[in-house]
Image 1 (cartoon, rainbow, N blue to C red):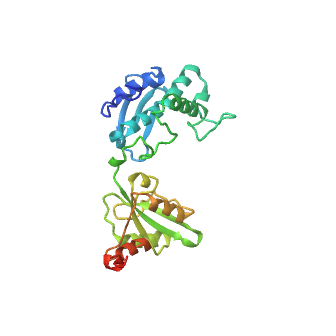
Image 2: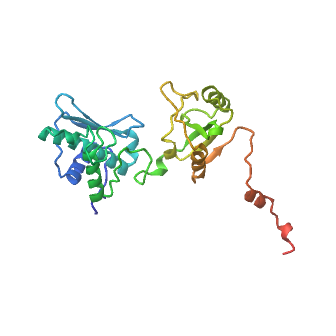
Image 3: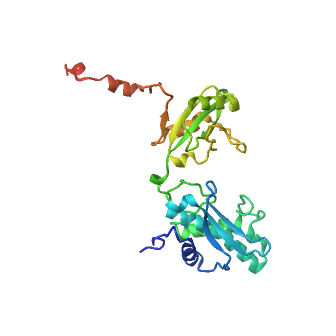
Length: 275
């Protein structure tokens, strides 16, 4: 069995942590009795490393419960959270704050506090030695080959061209349990974005992850600010071009046949009997 190909037990996270510690970190990560590895109810945040601010001892690695059906992604997200755990342990042992990536280090890429020279170098090192991990800076659910796409439900997106003149607009994801109420959606688009027209697409679940989710009554959440998309036509066309995308139409509206489809629809053998 090749390295990294052994079974991943999604229901024994501590065992997976210990196996990953041995394989990817040579067993160097230390933890006390209070440390746990557990699932969380978080949907957007795939993983989180928590520690005690007073003692700097690790407390938990929390992994989104959505990863339970995707063992390869689960392992990757866990190992990604083990890097800041290693950074904190290195700081405790040496007192060197550069391990914590709190500030930019001259000559090295710095993305944000916690993701700087040490984190990025460790991530690159692990990806080179263990390509099965496919570590990323900020894992996104459904993105990449580590996810079983057949297990990710499709989602509905409401497309709102808020300013066609400047080619900008917003895209919301409908709540999974909300009906596609066209009247409510049109009223929402007019009230919040001064838009007269909308369209609704059913897309692969991974494509909908980046967009804010409406409430069950098809209204924006109070703490949600929709991202204004520029080059809106291009963004929407890329969604439409995906092989799993389908447009949902209001009741009573028939789909328009494109030119080629219309030609095939009009074809009948008698028309070509002279050939």
